[in-house]
Length: 209
Image (cartoon, rainbow, N blue to C red):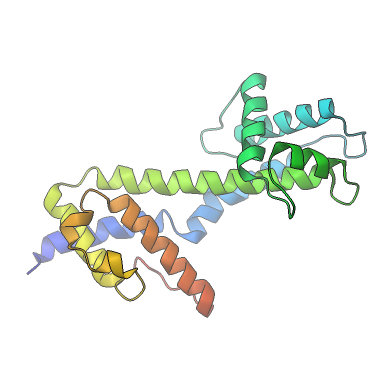
């Protein structure tokens, strides 16, 4: 039987993790600052788009968003910003017919889309990456402070709470199996909980233990 005090401490830790990775928290601390930075970014919206101007604007955009929108107000050099902008487009830019940096450049040339559209897509990818890094950091930093028995107890609580919508190959394993993989289990549970809420139009608190 679970020790009630240990269960209380484990549940409090889980609750802290979920509160700091909730949709409301992520929107307030990541989405909104990035969106404000995007809105305040200035460039010539009516100027000719050449490869030179495209490269310069996307680098300036990354500099601005990283300095004004992300936690820590990251300052980066022009060279780093240029490389980061290309990486963002290579990893995160998706059109109906292709993806990547050169696809983004072609769409920036398209008068029906333009450079502003490309920057919007870049901002969306920045948010996705920042959210994922934050969730990973919260889960890892909190769980690393727990000893083995508490990590097993946390896994037991999570498996019991989420048994209705976790994959069978996850539900069938003992809690001790996940003691060293709690961040992955939590991220999986968060994703499943959000999927269920989206399907049924609910907003259930998955940290209500």
